[in-house]
Image (cartoon, rainbow, N blue to C red):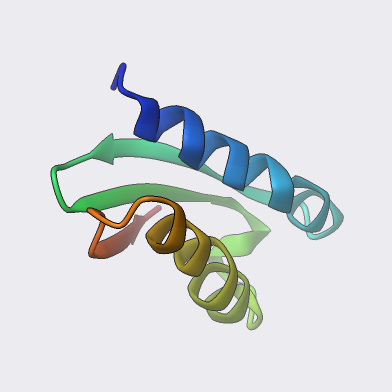
Length: 77
């Protein structure tokens, strides 16, 4: 994962870091595929009712906007 996409994704995750920390959670990049990103959901974000909003409408939306080749964001624990 040495390409520029990793840097872009990590910067996006940093933008959401205050929200993650407030909820004792977070996310990290597991893998980047040609058209997909796999993120590991950390801490309390795993069971948070707001996680689909934070990740789907926030993180995932920004990733797809900033990296048009990414068509899918998948999540793992």
